[in-house]
Amino acid sequence: MTETLEFPALLRLIDERSVSFRAAVSAAPSLDAQVPTCPEWTLRDLVEHLGGVHRRWAANVAAGPADGPSGTVPEAPKEPDALLAWSAESTEQLLGTLREFGPDRGCWTWWGGSQSPQTSGAVARHQVQEAAVHTYDAQATLGASQAQPLPEEAALDGVDEFLSTCCAGTDPWPHEPATVDYHATEGRSWRLTLSADGARATRIPATALGADASLRGTAGELVLVLYGRIPVDSLEVAGDGNLFELLLAWDPSA
Image (cartoon, rainbow, N blue to C red; front, side, top):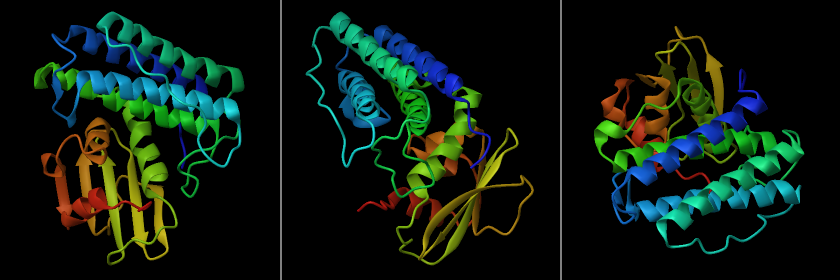
């Protein structure tokens, strides 16, 4: 995939989104509030999750190439101010480790069979999406009107990153072969080709035709659909819309 964000931009976005995440959490009346976009979680669960993600990936990058994940996450504090401080420390652990080792360090990742490399740079790229989507989750907990659009640069990279990391690979597509296009109104488009040989993500011209199904919206909206935060039919769907539901239900690692 092409036109990915440079490493310093990835670190900046992780930092900015994490700060926005904690600002939303701080504005909530209670950490026991249910997160509407992750209904099985409270806001406290969301903070503990993202902090744990940051600490685990810091450990994975620090460990270098390995056969499995590294490190354990200590129990997060319960008191709100202490929990937010723990969250900030978690983000700094991740950013400090990424700064120390740079973008080219090999490390364990769960996406070994995808189009994304097993490097610290790819970790940083995926962590932008973790922070961006969970910031949306935290903001949505304050009310639908408080959920802000994802930053454009994070969103445009996010569609590309999701398709190449979470979809592309050699696991066979368990349905009829298909092509699915994603069109961002900002002017970028991608095609996911699905077959018994697996899935392949490519950049395509915005005017490309011939897909079995296509989805059009802002890049931020596309990311939120890919992560199951908003429904597919809230965007412009063409062709066989059922393919998007099959994709959402597909777990290549299962």
